Length: 501
Image (cartoon, rainbow, N blue to C red; front, top):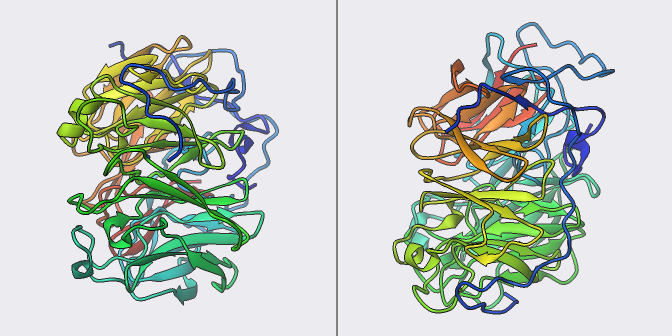
């Protein structure tokens, strides 16, 4: 079963988590809307697919899946082959929730494969093969069970950091997470290459052959001032490539999304945040997508610090053709712009079974936004404070209604309960040493730290269930999942951790 399909994660009888008494109480087209005025309301939004299951029990429990086939046996102490993992956090929602995955049972490193550079992006898994791209300019196909290198394709030599006007990645080649398109059978990878240009490659995951290549730069700009960090999104026959700026915010960049057909030819689509400068779309999790193909992004701080809202420091909804449809910004967007406290440091997380999106950023606010009417400036449906978030979050449906989200706050991973009425409540919070972008497998929340500690926490209570040393990693690294294992991007290559089963 492929994990890409919009509703497939929730299909075939899969059931949501139960959160009971254990929970603690607690950047274009479009117009420049004036501050405080809502953007035009979109058409009604259907809830993201999720089953309706009566509430039962206390704590956070995943009932058995009726009629689910038995998984194939794993080698003794090894990795079991499993379903595809085609994109960052498993599907276009970026929810990062695997209902039927195993909870930890003596988890351990199954294999570690060194590659030719740091791996910033989360790998994809297709047909028993882990596909990972490096800052060394190469893409690898690794056997998911053994870690053996099946193929390596060197796309281009990396660019030295000194070739860029600012930044903190040296050398630089592939920074974002790749994405699989099951329809065309290609894994898409974006590179930074000599002369500082960005290219999009379509790779055959069977043998590493290059099936397509085209320029992916924003037209008419200096590509050296643009950083392609956000995960690629494949949706509706288009590869969406987001851009922000380099560390230091040098140059006249503006947050952008380029949409390129998966066929490798045809006209590009383009969205540019309508701000004079900055407004980067840079969160590592990249854009998310709705069932109708609309694209959701978060944007960083822009240059405007007064006057009309410039759609920086925002959550924006774009059509599949990248026209601005609707948006939200905090009341203090202009103040946040002036202090580099942008909302774009964590990507959007769509809450399963609802039409809500949750966003959090450098400013410390957590915002619940209704995609059926995002409300413009100060249009949130709920708000909490105290979470300076970076990377990507995760979320799961709750039996009886509502959702639970896990946010990568710099002060420690935070559980947030979202009631059926949209009320936000803080739950447990992990120590500050556990702040990596989370993934939910079964009833365990997994988080990879920069020092290499992979930490598994009880999703209901936050109690530590497991800790494995996986190898030091970059700040925004997050796992991929398939079979009975997590596949982790590290500064040295890919590490597979067998969870159990």
